[in-house]
Every structure is written in structure tokens, then in C-alpha cells.
Length: 532
Image 1 (cartoon, helix red, strand yellow):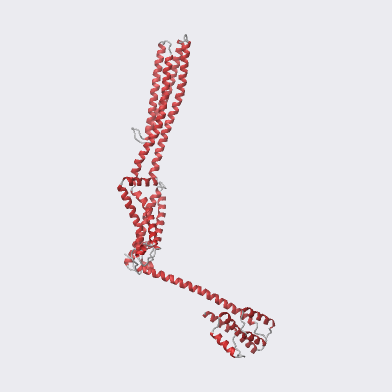
Image 2 (cartoon, helix red, strand yellow):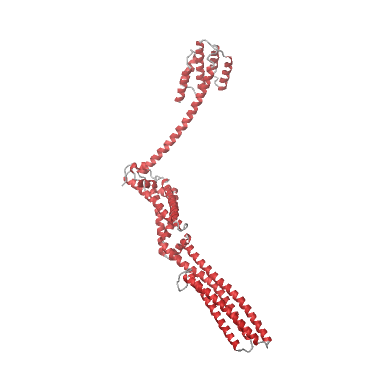
């Protein structure tokens, strides 16, 4: 319920009147309907600020991740900025005589453009928040496609390295077969057994290497989440078990290779014994055997490096994928792009995003339209009257102050001249009686220029002497008064009393002395100055 007196406004009503830029003192004499109108206007002005708090907090949450307090703080600052801008747009608008002219005026159009721009800035983060679930699903699906592309790219690199490893193993096997063909010595039972053991050892080493490569693939799949065991991405218990298996296989391969070398050494020694009579065949076999050993050493070292390279490539791929997921899910620009893509693919998303944006724009534009479209009410008329009265008062006050300054300056100047003349004339009160004739002649000569007047006084002062005759003093004082009046008449304009006095003085060759005291003459002149 609206209260009747301005002192009875509630805190909430005062706040709404503040938001609408309404003067409660002027509004207090208006009707309840008008009061409710401006309180509702305050509601409308406050609404965009509340939405700006929500919008700004969400926007800053994408910047200050996992810091809700800081996001709300900057969102509150953004809301206060929007509130002040909207209040300024409302307060500074003045209604004209025609609503039609007001609507199409530059003042209103510029305000509407600013309001639309602000509303769009507020609306976009809110629309992103309202469609966050759809945006998350879209980003997830797009990320899966991009992650699959990343996996394929790095898998191709891994496949190239694995092919190189297979080529190296094949080269070793071919060389070993060639060495077997060189050996043409008759074999005894010991040599046959050694050859069988070597073949078994080579087969065991080959199987262990195949199992080792398979274990590396299982470890990579387990870390990347492609394994059928757990299906979870990351380094878990299964991955650690596979790593232990890889270490065990490496140890077994090393022992098998050591055993294989021992068997070959035994075979070599046996063959040397058997080929004692065939030096040429033995030398050829030894040469091939040496080459095979060197080839195996070189290729195995290369294979070890290639296996390390495969692990490095897989780790790099996993880091790329995990970093891509985190960046794409929290980036404001990525979410905006996702909403745009959804709008292109889904008509409902496009329709509702546009409708929500239009609603927010209307909420920000509505206070300006509310202020412009209605005709002037009682509050507008009172405010206009108050403003005109204030402007007229300021104009009158400014003119009065200027006039007072001029009067004060003129008064001060006249008083300054009066005091100077009185001061100079005061020294002449004791002159000789013939000084009166000189003053009268000077007065009747109508020479009133300041420099002549002051110069004449200085000359007479040098020759002045004291007079003991009171009558002469009175007559001299009377002449002084007349000269003072004439001086002021010359410098500041004649008063009616001065004109009458001068006319009477011209008719009489010997005017009757007028006795005027110094204090009385000074008081009279000050009174006239105050009147002016």
C-alpha cells in the first residue's frame, strides 16, 4: 500500500524510487496511482541489474574457475554498473510537448540503442547458462570426434615405428638362416642337439618379444581407456600389473638371449672342433656368424629405442586428449561457438535462444518506453514547474549578485574619493580668509578635472596658516562642502539638491555661507550612495 507522506515511505519504496530517479518530496502530493506508477518504474529499472548479477557471475565463473566468491563479487560490480547506466538513461530524459516527437527524437533513439546493446550483453551469458546441458552434450560429442582424430594421428605414427621393429627382426631371422646355410660340416649328435636347443631358444625369444609387444599395447590401451578390461582412462591397478608383466618379460628375454648366446657359443665351439679339417668352411661360417651377432646387437638396440619411442608417442597422445577435454569444457568462447552450431543444427534451440534474448532486451528497453510513451502526469508537471522556478531563481540570483558587485565597486570607489577629498580639505580649515575667495573662484570657474583639483590643493597647502577666527573657519568649511558637492557632481552625476544649490549660488555673487559639519556631510553622501 502506498503511503501518503514522503516521510512515511518504507525502505523498499525509497529504494525503488531511487532506482527510478523519482523525487519523493515532489511525489508526495501526487495521487496513489502516480506513486504506484513510479514505484513500478523502479522495479523495471532494477530488473536488468538483477539479471546482470546472474549473467556477470556466470561469465566470470568461466574465468575464475572453482572460485564462486570472486565470480559473485565481480558479478555484483557489473550489476551496479548496469543499474547506474539505466538510472542515468531514465533520469536525464525530459518529456516534450509531443509524445510522437519524443519517441523519434535523437535523445530517445540513442537511449534505446544503448539499452538494446546492454540487454544483449546481459542476455548472452544467461542464454548460455540456460542451454548448458545441450551445450555440454554437443561439446562432448565434438570432443570425442576430435579425440578420435588425435588417436588415429598418433596411432599411424606408432604403426610406422612398429613396422620398423618388425623389419629389424625379419632382417635378423634372414641373416640367421643364411648362417645356417653356410655351415656344411657333417653334424654329430651333439651339434644336432645344440642346434635344436638354439632353435628352441630362438623360438622362445621370439615368443617373448611378441608377448612383450602385446603387453605394451595393452598398457597403452589401459591408460587411454580403450582396454576392454576396465574401460577407464588413467593409470590404475591393471596398468601397474601390466607394467610388472613387461618388466618380467624383459628379464626373461635377457636370460633367454643369454642362454641363446651360450648355446650358440657351445655350438660354435663344437663346430670348430668338427671343422678342424675344413679351414675354409670354418672361416666362412665364422665370418657369417660374426656378422649375424653384430647385426643382432645393432638391431636389438634399435628395437629398444623404437619401443621407447612408441611409449613416448602414446603418452603424448594421452596428454593431448586430456588437456583438450579440460579446455573445451570451460572456455566461454568455445561454449558460445557450440551454441551457434546448435542453433544452426536445431531450429528449437535457435528459436528459444532468440526469444530469450528478445525478452531480456524488452526488459531493459521497457523502462525507457514507460518513461516516454505516457503523457505528462501531475509529477511531470510539478517537476517541470520546479525546474523552471529553479532556473528563473538562478537567473535572478545571478543578475542580483552581478548588480550587487557593481554597486559595491561603485560605492567603494566613491567613498574612496570622498575620503581623499575630505582628508585634503581638512588641512585647509585653518587657511587665511583670502583662501575662501580662491576656492570660490576655483569653484565658479567650473574646472573639475581631478588632476587640476589635487594640484591646486597641494599648492595652497604649502602656504596655509592657522586661522583663529571662527567665522572664517565656518565660511571656509562651507566652501569646502560646496567644492566637495561639485566634485561629486562632476564625477558621479548631480543630485537634485546639488543642482538647486548650484543655481542659487550662481544667482548670488556672494552666497550666504552654509555651515555643514564634516560628519553631517559624510553621512549625507553615504546615505545617497546607499540609495543608489
